[in-house]
Image (cartoon, rainbow, N blue to C red; front, top):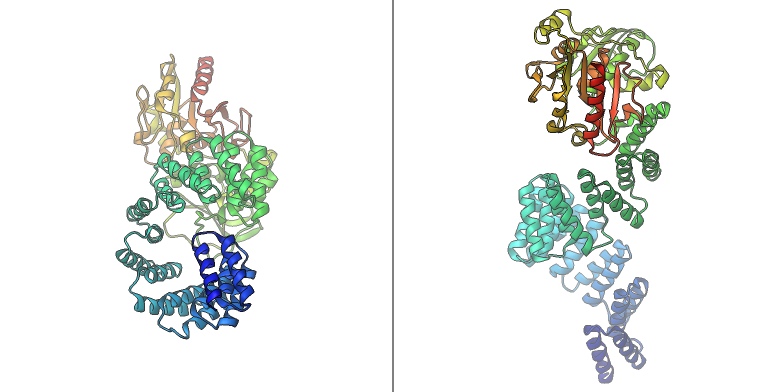
Length: 607
C-alpha cells in the first residue's frame, strides 16, 4: 500500500504542477499496482474533465466512488462533471450525496442550490442558497443569492446582496460587474458606471465590463468614448459578439459607414445567424447608397428570424424606395409591431377597407407631422366607404386638417374621442387602397388655409416685384436622421445674397440673419399654411413644411440627403406625391454646398 501511495503522491505532485501527462502516467502506475485505487481513478477523472472529455471523467470518478465509497470530494467533482454535460438532475443527486456526511457544508449546499436554479427550481434553490449563506458568512453565497434575485427581477434585494458580498470581499470584480448590471436595469446610470469602474480597476482586461461601460457611455451620447471601450473588449475577447455589434451601432451614429459595415461583416463571419447584425448591415448599405444590397441584408435577417419586426419594416421601406409599391405596402404594417411602437388601444375593430356606409370610422395619425400631411389625402377615399369620418391628429394640425375634403370631424390627440365603430392607422391607408405609383391620390391642393387667415398674413408678405421665397433649413432635432437631413444655417444662408429675391424664414423656432422671420409668430400649421399661400416658392429640407407646401400645390423645392427617405424614391427630380414639388438631391454624403449651388442657379433662372 505504501508503494501505491508514494506513486499516487508523485502523480498528485505533477498534477498540481500542471504536468498532466506525467500525472496521468503515475496514476496508471498506481492502478497497475492496485486496480481499484480510488484516488488514482478520481485524479484521472479530474484530468479527463480538465481536457474536456466529460464522459470519460464521469466514468472514472464513478469507478472511484464505487471503489472508495461516496467521499464528499468525489461526489462533488462528479456533480461538476455532470453539470458540464448538462445532466443537472444527476449533478444535484451527486451534491446531495456529498452532503450526507456533512449537511452543514455551505460550499456543497451552494453548488446544490445553483444546480436546482439551473433546473428551474428557483424557490428550492433560493432556500438552499440562503441556508448556505447563514452557515458561511462568506461573500460567495451573497453573490450567488444576488444573482438569483436578479434573475427573478428582485433588483433591490439583488443589489443589497451584491453590496454585502463586496463588503466581505472588496476585491471581487464579478460582484461589481453584476451589481452594475442590476443598477443598469434600474436606469441608475451613474451608480452603474461606478460599479463597472471598480470592476475594471480590479480586472482591467474584463471584456464584459468594458462592453457594458461602453453601453452606458453610448446612452449618454458619448459615442466616441463608447467606441474605445468596445474596441478594448474585442481586443481582449475576439469572439465576443456584443461589443462588435455595439461598435457597429456607434459607427452608424458617427456616419462612419465603412467601419460599421466592417464591424457587422466580422460579426457575421463569427455568427452568420445574427439577425440584428443583418438588419443593421442593411441600414448601413442604404446609407452608402446600395439599396439592392440592403434589400438582401434585410431578407437575410428575416430568413433567420421571420418575425423580426424591424427587419420586415425596413424591407418594406427598401421596397418603397425602389418603387416596388405593392410589396412595400404589404409589409408596411410591420411598423406597428416594432419595439418602440406604441399603438393606441382601441376596442373597436380595425377597418380594413370594407364598405361600411352607416359606420363611423376613426383614422388616427401616427409618426410625424409630415406623415400626417402626406397621407391625409386618403380621407376622401375613406369617406366614400363609410358614413362618418373622424380624424385624430396632432394638436398643431387640427385647424389645418379641418378643411380637408371627406373629414367630418377633427380631434386632437390626447383629447376625448367621440364614438366610432372602426379605427385605422393613417399610414395603413395606402396599403388598404393598394396604392401603386400610377394610383397615388395626387389631386392638389387638398389643404388650404382659411381665406381670412391668408389675408392677415398678406400684410407681412407684401406683393412686390421681388420673388418671395420661404425657407426651412432644419427639421425636428429629435428625428433619428436629423443630422443628415438638416442643413447648417451658415451653408443655407449663402442663398440670401441673391438679388431680386425677398426671403422669409418659416422656421418656427430659429431666426436666420438676412431673412424676414415669420415662423417665430406661428401658433400652428394653419398659420404656416396661410404664410405659404402668400409666397411664390418654398425651399425646404425634408420636413413637414415641404409636405404642407406640396399639399397646397405651392411650388416647393425639397432638398434631400444622399440617403433619402423612402417616399422620395431614387434619382428622380420630381415626386408623384406632390405635382408642384422639385427634388434637389445630394450626390455625395454630407455635401450640401453643391445642392445649394444648384438651388442658386435655379433661383436666378426664375428672375
